[in-house]
Length: 229
Image (tube, rainbow, N blue to C red; front, side):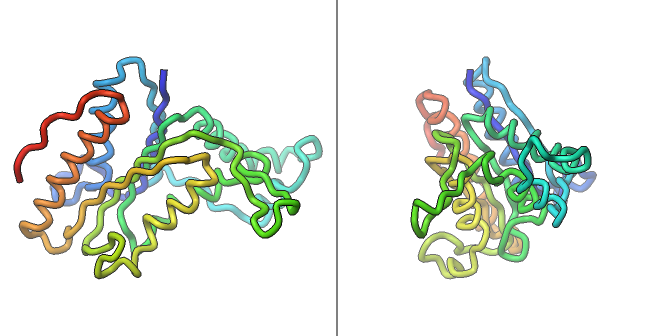
């Protein structure tokens, strides 16, 4: 049985009275999960909506607790690391990591960065050894797959796109995901939201079709035929 860890990071919900206010990235994530579960009836999904339940930001005391040997941590330090321990346990269980993220100011939402800060932790998800030379950090987990679904108001953030140099969302997440044990990454994006024109509609439609195809691929099922757009 495979486990999917589903992380949403938009502050928007998907049940707003006005549908136009609903989170696109979360809707795309739900499409992936629904498709994947229909193909993996025995699969397990762990879901965290960081927009609705933001993780704590790390503090100086949190860092001190991390670098205190576990056997020497006091009650307060254990409490400071409790959420981190839970989040890391969820990550460790996951074979497949699904992250949905809108582009906020050309980067990731603050709640998603807070989640990464809670889970990328020395001796828990990575080790540090100066004997490795100039690259002393190494992940402790292996074999995980990341599906990254993003939405943006503008467009052209793909490699060699007109705004590629402004994309601090996907590349940042890919870099950090290495220390979560991610070996392969699949990225699907929806763009043009602020333009609200045919390009946006087409981008969203293509993203949905690509998500269904990817869910089939990762579940080991033949992909459905792609409809003409």
